[in-house]
Length: 418
Ligand code: ASP
Ligand code: MG
Image (cartoon, rainbow, N blue to C red):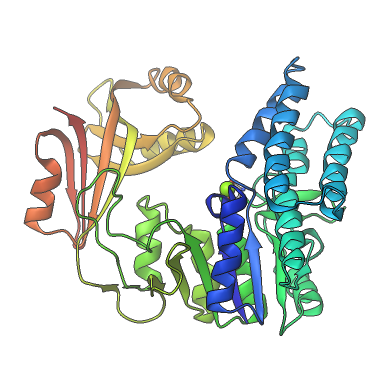
Protein backbone atom coordinates (compact mmCIF):
# COMPACT_ATOMS: atom_id res chain seq x y z
CA UNK A 1 0.00 0.00 0.00
CA UNK A 2 1.10 3.58 -0.64
CA UNK A 3 0.25 6.54 1.60
CA UNK A 4 -0.24 10.01 0.08
CA UNK A 5 -0.56 13.32 1.86
CA UNK A 6 -2.14 16.39 0.31
CA UNK A 7 -1.77 19.60 2.33
CA UNK A 8 -4.01 22.63 2.58
CA UNK A 9 -2.45 24.39 -0.42
CA UNK A 10 -3.25 21.47 -2.72
CA UNK A 11 -6.97 21.59 -1.92
CA UNK A 12 -7.41 25.33 -1.45
CA UNK A 13 -10.06 25.65 -4.18
CA UNK A 14 -12.09 23.60 -6.66
CA UNK A 15 -9.27 23.58 -9.22
CA UNK A 16 -6.89 22.27 -6.58
CA UNK A 17 -9.26 19.39 -5.77
CA UNK A 18 -9.66 18.59 -9.47
CA UNK A 19 -5.89 18.55 -9.71
CA UNK A 20 -5.67 16.04 -6.85
CA UNK A 21 -8.03 13.87 -8.89
CA UNK A 22 -5.69 14.24 -11.90
CA UNK A 23 -2.67 13.33 -9.80
CA UNK A 24 -4.39 10.14 -8.63
CA UNK A 25 -5.31 9.27 -12.22
CA UNK A 26 -1.69 9.68 -13.25
CA UNK A 27 0.06 7.89 -10.39
CA UNK A 28 -2.58 5.29 -9.54
CA UNK A 29 -5.07 5.01 -6.70
CA UNK A 30 -5.60 1.34 -6.06
CA UNK A 31 -4.28 0.27 -2.71
CA UNK A 32 -3.74 3.86 -1.63
CA UNK A 33 -4.54 5.77 1.56
CA UNK A 34 -4.82 9.53 1.12
CA UNK A 35 -4.39 11.88 4.09
CA UNK A 36 -5.81 15.36 3.53
CA UNK A 37 -5.42 18.61 5.51
CA UNK A 38 -7.93 21.39 5.97
CA UNK A 39 -8.47 23.48 2.83
CA UNK A 40 -6.23 26.50 2.34
CA UNK A 41 -6.00 28.61 5.48
CA UNK A 42 -9.00 27.02 7.22
CA UNK A 43 -7.09 26.06 10.37
CA UNK A 44 -6.07 29.69 10.88
CA UNK A 45 -9.63 30.80 10.22
CA UNK A 46 -10.93 28.40 12.89
CA UNK A 47 -8.30 29.74 15.30
CA UNK A 48 -9.97 33.13 14.90
CA UNK A 49 -13.36 31.53 15.64
CA UNK A 50 -12.00 30.04 18.87
CA UNK A 51 -10.45 33.30 19.94
CA UNK A 52 -13.72 35.13 19.31
CA UNK A 53 -15.56 32.47 21.29
CA UNK A 54 -13.34 32.87 24.34
CA UNK A 55 -13.28 36.67 24.02
CA UNK A 56 -17.07 36.61 23.77
CA UNK A 57 -16.57 38.79 20.73
CA UNK A 58 -19.43 40.13 18.65
CA UNK A 59 -17.46 38.87 15.63
CA UNK A 60 -18.02 35.20 16.50
CA UNK A 61 -20.87 34.58 14.08
CA UNK A 62 -19.16 36.49 11.28
CA UNK A 63 -15.98 34.47 11.67
CA UNK A 64 -17.92 31.19 11.47
CA UNK A 65 -19.79 32.44 8.42
CA UNK A 66 -16.52 33.28 6.74
CA UNK A 67 -15.30 29.68 7.01
CA UNK A 68 -18.68 28.49 5.82
CA UNK A 69 -18.79 30.80 2.81
CA UNK A 70 -15.31 29.74 1.74
CA UNK A 71 -16.28 26.07 1.68
CA UNK A 72 -19.66 26.81 0.09
CA UNK A 73 -17.96 28.47 -2.85
CA UNK A 74 -15.83 25.37 -3.36
CA UNK A 75 -18.93 23.17 -3.16
CA UNK A 76 -20.72 25.25 -5.76
CA UNK A 77 -17.71 25.13 -8.05
CA UNK A 78 -17.54 21.33 -7.77
CA UNK A 79 -21.20 20.25 -7.77
CA UNK A 80 -23.91 21.52 -10.12
CA UNK A 81 -26.77 19.96 -8.22
CA UNK A 82 -27.50 21.72 -4.97
CA UNK A 83 -29.48 18.70 -3.83
CA UNK A 84 -26.35 16.57 -3.80
CA UNK A 85 -25.89 14.92 -0.39
CA UNK A 86 -22.58 16.72 0.19
CA UNK A 87 -24.37 20.04 0.84
CA UNK A 88 -26.40 18.56 3.70
CA UNK A 89 -23.31 16.79 5.04
CA UNK A 90 -21.31 20.03 5.24
CA UNK A 91 -24.27 21.93 6.68
CA UNK A 92 -24.52 19.32 9.42
CA UNK A 93 -20.87 19.87 10.40
CA UNK A 94 -21.58 23.58 10.88
CA UNK A 95 -24.80 22.91 12.80
CA UNK A 96 -22.87 20.57 15.09
CA UNK A 97 -20.24 23.27 15.58
CA UNK A 98 -22.88 25.81 16.59
CA UNK A 99 -24.43 23.43 19.09
CA UNK A 100 -21.03 22.49 20.49
CA UNK A 101 -20.20 26.16 21.10
CA UNK A 102 -23.62 26.77 22.62
CA UNK A 103 -23.50 23.81 24.98
CA UNK A 104 -19.83 23.71 25.85
CA UNK A 105 -19.07 24.29 29.51
CA UNK A 106 -15.35 23.58 29.42
CA UNK A 107 -13.10 26.57 30.07
CA UNK A 108 -10.13 24.55 28.72
CA UNK A 109 -8.89 26.52 25.72
CA UNK A 110 -6.86 23.65 24.28
CA UNK A 111 -9.77 21.23 24.56
CA UNK A 112 -12.15 23.60 22.79
CA UNK A 113 -9.46 24.35 20.22
CA UNK A 114 -9.19 20.73 19.18
CA UNK A 115 -12.96 20.19 19.02
CA UNK A 116 -13.25 23.19 16.69
CA UNK A 117 -10.14 23.34 14.44
CA UNK A 118 -10.48 19.63 13.69
CA UNK A 119 -13.59 20.42 11.65
CA UNK A 120 -11.35 21.85 8.93
CA UNK A 121 -10.08 18.37 8.11
CA UNK A 122 -13.51 16.80 8.56
CA UNK A 123 -15.02 19.22 6.03
CA UNK A 124 -12.19 18.93 3.52
CA UNK A 125 -12.23 15.13 3.41
CA UNK A 126 -16.03 15.11 3.27
CA UNK A 127 -15.97 17.34 0.19
CA UNK A 128 -13.09 15.54 -1.55
CA UNK A 129 -14.52 12.08 -0.90
CA UNK A 130 -17.97 13.05 -2.21
CA UNK A 131 -16.45 14.77 -5.22
CA UNK A 132 -14.34 11.75 -6.16
CA UNK A 133 -17.35 9.44 -5.90
CA UNK A 134 -19.34 11.96 -7.96
CA UNK A 135 -16.80 11.82 -10.82
CA UNK A 136 -16.52 8.04 -10.65
CA UNK A 137 -13.47 7.59 -8.44
CA UNK A 138 -14.86 5.26 -5.81
CA UNK A 139 -13.32 5.62 -2.36
CA UNK A 140 -13.83 4.83 1.28
CA UNK A 141 -13.99 7.80 3.71
CA UNK A 142 -12.46 6.98 7.09
CA UNK A 143 -12.90 8.94 10.30
CA UNK A 144 -9.33 9.10 11.57
CA UNK A 145 -10.61 9.75 15.10
CA UNK A 146 -11.76 6.14 15.19
CA UNK A 147 -8.29 4.99 14.20
CA UNK A 148 -5.57 7.14 15.75
CA UNK A 149 -5.85 7.01 19.54
CA UNK A 150 -3.93 9.48 21.70
CA UNK A 151 -3.62 10.76 25.24
CA UNK A 152 -5.54 13.92 26.14
CA UNK A 153 -2.79 16.48 25.66
CA UNK A 154 -4.99 18.67 23.51
CA UNK A 155 -3.16 20.48 20.69
CA UNK A 156 -0.08 18.26 21.06
CA UNK A 157 -1.45 14.79 21.62
CA UNK A 158 0.80 11.76 22.04
CA UNK A 159 -0.08 8.69 19.96
CA UNK A 160 -1.05 5.41 21.62
CA UNK A 161 0.68 3.19 19.09
CA UNK A 162 -0.72 -0.10 20.26
CA UNK A 163 -4.38 0.90 20.04
CA UNK A 164 -3.75 2.79 16.81
CA UNK A 165 -2.05 -0.19 15.22
CA UNK A 166 -5.01 -2.42 16.07
CA UNK A 167 -7.58 0.02 14.69
CA UNK A 168 -5.70 0.66 11.48
CA UNK A 169 -5.05 -3.02 10.78
CA UNK A 170 -8.74 -3.73 11.28
CA UNK A 171 -10.33 -0.85 9.40
CA UNK A 172 -8.19 0.25 6.48
CA UNK A 173 -9.21 -1.64 3.36
CA UNK A 174 -6.44 -2.76 1.08
CA UNK A 175 -6.85 -2.76 -2.72
CA UNK A 176 -8.98 0.34 -2.64
CA UNK A 177 -8.75 4.13 -2.30
CA UNK A 178 -9.08 5.26 1.34
CA UNK A 179 -9.49 8.93 2.24
CA UNK A 180 -8.93 10.27 5.73
CA UNK A 181 -8.06 13.38 7.76
CA UNK A 182 -4.60 14.52 8.72
CA UNK A 183 -3.72 16.14 12.07
CA UNK A 184 -6.48 14.50 14.19
CA UNK A 185 -6.87 11.71 16.70
CA UNK A 186 -9.05 11.02 19.71
CA UNK A 187 -8.57 10.34 23.40
CA UNK A 188 -9.99 7.64 25.66
CA UNK A 189 -13.26 9.53 25.99
CA UNK A 190 -13.46 9.86 22.20
CA UNK A 191 -12.92 13.60 22.31
CA UNK A 192 -11.00 14.91 19.33
CA UNK A 193 -7.32 15.67 19.79
CA UNK A 194 -4.78 17.20 17.40
CA UNK A 195 -1.14 16.32 16.82
CA UNK A 196 0.28 19.86 16.65
CA UNK A 197 0.15 22.39 13.82
CA UNK A 198 1.25 21.03 10.46
CA UNK A 199 0.62 17.56 11.87
CA UNK A 200 -0.78 15.97 8.73
CA UNK A 201 2.61 14.76 7.52
CA UNK A 202 2.92 12.94 10.81
CA UNK A 203 -0.49 11.34 10.28
CA UNK A 204 0.73 9.97 6.95
CA UNK A 205 3.77 8.50 8.70
CA UNK A 206 1.60 6.89 11.40
CA UNK A 207 -0.51 5.16 8.76
CA UNK A 208 2.52 4.10 6.77
CA UNK A 209 4.10 2.60 9.87
CA UNK A 210 0.97 0.70 10.92
CA UNK A 211 0.24 -0.51 7.37
CA UNK A 212 3.86 -1.41 6.58
CA UNK A 213 3.35 0.79 3.55
CA UNK A 214 5.68 0.62 0.59
CA UNK A 215 6.15 4.42 0.61
CA UNK A 216 4.77 7.80 1.69
CA UNK A 217 4.44 10.67 -0.76
CA UNK A 218 3.91 14.26 0.34
CA UNK A 219 2.52 16.24 -2.60
CA UNK A 220 3.63 19.86 -2.65
CA UNK A 221 3.64 23.02 -4.74
CA UNK A 222 7.44 22.77 -5.04
CA UNK A 223 9.35 20.14 -7.04
CA UNK A 224 10.71 18.48 -3.87
CA UNK A 225 13.14 19.40 -1.09
CA UNK A 226 15.49 22.18 -2.17
CA UNK A 227 18.94 22.90 -0.71
CA UNK A 228 17.77 26.41 0.25
CA UNK A 229 14.57 28.36 0.69
CA UNK A 230 14.12 30.17 -2.65
CA UNK A 231 12.54 33.11 -0.80
CA UNK A 232 15.93 33.93 0.70
CA UNK A 233 18.52 32.31 -1.57
CA UNK A 234 19.11 32.47 -5.31
CA UNK A 235 19.75 29.37 -7.39
CA UNK A 236 18.21 26.82 -5.05
CA UNK A 237 18.65 23.30 -6.35
CA UNK A 238 16.57 20.16 -5.97
CA UNK A 239 17.91 17.41 -3.71
CA UNK A 240 17.31 13.97 -5.23
CA UNK A 241 18.16 11.84 -2.22
CA UNK A 242 18.47 12.55 1.51
CA UNK A 243 19.15 9.97 4.20
CA UNK A 244 16.81 9.87 7.22
CA UNK A 245 19.65 11.06 9.37
CA UNK A 246 20.47 14.04 7.19
CA UNK A 247 16.76 14.90 6.91
CA UNK A 248 16.44 14.89 10.69
CA UNK A 249 19.50 17.16 10.95
CA UNK A 250 18.04 19.58 8.40
CA UNK A 251 14.70 19.62 10.19
CA UNK A 252 16.44 20.20 13.51
CA UNK A 253 18.16 23.32 12.20
CA UNK A 254 14.86 24.67 10.98
CA UNK A 255 14.22 23.36 7.47
CA UNK A 256 10.45 23.35 7.41
CA UNK A 257 9.81 20.94 4.57
CA UNK A 258 9.68 17.79 6.65
CA UNK A 259 8.74 17.59 10.30
CA UNK A 260 11.16 15.45 12.38
CA UNK A 261 8.25 13.66 14.06
CA UNK A 262 7.28 12.41 10.61
CA UNK A 263 10.66 10.87 9.93
CA UNK A 264 10.95 8.77 13.08
CA UNK A 265 8.30 6.12 12.39
CA UNK A 266 9.36 5.89 8.75
CA UNK A 267 13.00 5.46 9.60
CA UNK A 268 12.17 2.65 12.03
CA UNK A 269 10.69 0.56 9.25
CA UNK A 270 12.83 2.02 6.48
CA UNK A 271 9.80 3.20 4.55
CA UNK A 272 10.90 5.73 1.90
CA UNK A 273 9.37 9.19 1.91
CA UNK A 274 8.94 11.08 -1.36
CA UNK A 275 8.34 14.80 -1.66
CA UNK A 276 6.85 15.50 -5.07
CA UNK A 277 5.16 18.23 -7.05
CA UNK A 278 1.40 18.06 -7.42
CA UNK A 279 1.85 20.13 -10.56
CA UNK A 280 4.23 17.64 -12.20
CA UNK A 281 3.39 14.39 -10.41
CA UNK A 282 5.43 12.16 -12.70
CA UNK A 283 8.73 13.85 -11.90
CA UNK A 284 10.86 11.97 -9.35
CA UNK A 285 11.03 14.75 -6.71
CA UNK A 286 13.06 14.06 -3.57
CA UNK A 287 13.49 10.69 -1.93
CA UNK A 288 14.23 10.43 1.80
CA UNK A 289 15.41 6.92 2.54
CA UNK A 290 18.20 4.72 3.67
CA UNK A 291 21.19 5.26 1.43
CA UNK A 292 23.31 8.22 0.33
CA UNK A 293 23.36 11.09 2.81
CA UNK A 294 22.79 13.75 0.23
CA UNK A 295 22.56 13.76 -3.53
CA UNK A 296 23.78 15.88 -5.12
CA UNK A 297 26.51 16.57 -2.54
CA UNK A 298 25.99 20.27 -1.92
CA UNK A 299 25.74 22.86 0.83
CA UNK A 300 22.28 23.20 2.39
CA UNK A 301 21.19 26.60 3.65
CA UNK A 302 18.66 27.16 6.39
CA UNK A 303 17.69 30.55 7.71
CA UNK A 304 15.71 31.44 10.80
CA UNK A 305 14.67 35.06 10.80
CA UNK A 306 13.54 37.14 13.73
CA UNK A 307 15.69 35.47 16.37
CA UNK A 308 16.94 36.99 19.60
CA UNK A 309 20.57 36.83 20.64
CA UNK A 310 20.76 37.03 24.42
CA UNK A 311 24.06 37.44 26.26
CA UNK A 312 24.35 36.91 29.97
CA UNK A 313 27.33 37.67 32.16
CA UNK A 314 27.64 37.26 35.88
CA UNK A 315 27.22 40.41 37.95
CA UNK A 316 30.32 39.66 40.04
CA UNK A 317 32.68 38.30 37.38
CA UNK A 318 32.20 34.76 38.62
CA UNK A 319 32.21 31.95 36.08
CA UNK A 320 29.03 30.83 34.41
CA UNK A 321 29.03 27.16 35.29
CA UNK A 322 26.79 24.11 35.25
CA UNK A 323 24.57 25.37 38.01
CA UNK A 324 23.89 28.74 36.38
CA UNK A 325 23.49 27.20 32.98
CA UNK A 326 20.95 24.64 34.13
CA UNK A 327 18.98 27.40 35.81
CA UNK A 328 19.04 29.48 32.63
CA UNK A 329 17.77 26.52 30.64
CA UNK A 330 15.01 25.81 33.12
CA UNK A 331 13.80 29.38 32.69
CA UNK A 332 13.99 29.19 28.90
CA UNK A 333 11.93 26.01 29.04
CA UNK A 334 9.43 27.56 31.44
CA UNK A 335 8.90 30.56 29.15
CA UNK A 336 8.63 28.29 26.07
CA UNK A 337 11.58 30.01 24.42
CA UNK A 338 13.35 27.72 21.99
CA UNK A 339 17.15 27.70 21.94
CA UNK A 340 18.66 27.60 18.46
CA UNK A 341 22.36 28.13 19.27
CA UNK A 342 24.56 28.22 22.38
CA UNK A 343 27.94 29.83 22.94
CA UNK A 344 29.80 30.32 26.19
CA UNK A 345 33.02 31.84 27.50
CA UNK A 346 34.27 31.99 31.08
CA UNK A 347 32.06 34.79 32.28
CA UNK A 348 29.49 35.13 29.57
CA UNK A 349 26.90 32.90 28.05
CA UNK A 350 25.05 33.60 24.80
CA UNK A 351 22.01 31.92 23.37
CA UNK A 352 20.23 32.52 20.14
CA UNK A 353 16.54 31.89 20.71
CA UNK A 354 13.20 31.83 19.00
CA UNK A 355 10.67 33.65 21.18
CA UNK A 356 7.56 32.45 19.38
CA UNK A 357 5.21 33.29 22.20
CA UNK A 358 6.64 36.73 23.03
CA UNK A 359 7.80 35.87 26.55
CA UNK A 360 11.24 37.49 26.46
CA UNK A 361 10.37 40.62 28.48
CA UNK A 362 9.22 38.42 31.34
CA UNK A 363 12.27 36.17 31.12
CA UNK A 364 14.57 39.18 31.03
CA UNK A 365 13.21 40.58 34.27
CA UNK A 366 13.80 37.25 36.02
CA UNK A 367 17.30 36.84 34.59
CA UNK A 368 18.29 40.43 35.44
CA UNK A 369 18.21 39.58 39.13
CA UNK A 370 21.24 37.35 38.70
CA UNK A 371 22.93 38.35 35.46
CA UNK A 372 23.84 41.31 33.41
CA UNK A 373 21.59 40.85 30.37
CA UNK A 374 22.20 42.31 26.93
CA UNK A 375 20.50 41.32 23.70
CA UNK A 376 20.12 41.92 19.98
CA UNK A 377 16.67 41.45 18.59
CA UNK A 378 15.63 40.71 15.04
CA UNK A 379 18.80 38.82 14.17
CA UNK A 380 18.99 35.99 11.63
CA UNK A 381 20.47 32.58 12.23
CA UNK A 382 21.98 30.98 9.15
CA UNK A 383 22.91 27.32 9.24
CA UNK A 384 24.92 25.78 6.43
CA UNK A 385 25.16 22.00 6.42
CA UNK A 386 28.15 20.72 4.44
CA UNK A 387 29.52 24.23 4.23
CA UNK A 388 32.45 25.32 2.15
CA UNK A 389 34.51 28.45 2.65
CA UNK A 390 32.78 29.95 -0.34
CA UNK A 391 29.25 29.20 0.83
CA UNK A 392 30.06 30.60 4.29
CA UNK A 393 31.43 33.82 2.82
CA UNK A 394 28.47 34.22 0.51
CA UNK A 395 26.05 34.12 3.43
CA UNK A 396 28.08 36.53 5.59
CA UNK A 397 28.49 39.04 2.77
CA UNK A 398 27.10 42.53 3.55
CA UNK A 399 26.01 41.44 7.00
CA UNK A 400 27.31 42.09 10.49
CA UNK A 401 28.31 38.73 11.95
CA UNK A 402 27.57 38.55 15.68
CA UNK A 403 28.40 34.88 16.28
CA UNK A 404 30.13 32.32 14.10
CA UNK A 405 30.22 28.69 15.15
CA UNK A 406 31.74 25.78 13.27
CA UNK A 407 31.47 22.05 13.75
CA UNK A 408 32.61 19.39 11.33
CA UNK A 409 29.68 19.52 8.94
CA UNK A 410 27.84 22.60 10.07
CA UNK A 411 28.52 26.32 10.07
CA UNK A 412 26.17 28.62 11.95
CA UNK A 413 26.23 32.39 11.74
CA UNK A 414 24.11 34.88 13.66
CA UNK A 415 23.84 38.10 11.68
CA UNK A 416 22.31 41.51 11.71
CA UNK A 417 21.56 43.31 8.46
CA UNK A 418 24.37 45.80 7.78
N1 ASP B 1 -4.49 21.82 9.05
C1 ASP B 1 -3.45 21.66 10.04
C2 ASP B 1 -2.58 22.90 10.09
O1 ASP B 1 -2.73 23.77 9.24
C3 ASP B 1 -2.62 20.44 9.83
C4 ASP B 1 -1.78 20.46 8.58
O2 ASP B 1 -2.02 21.23 7.66
O3 ASP B 1 -0.84 19.67 8.52
O4 ASP B 1 -1.78 23.02 10.97
MG1 MG C 1 -2.60 23.18 6.90
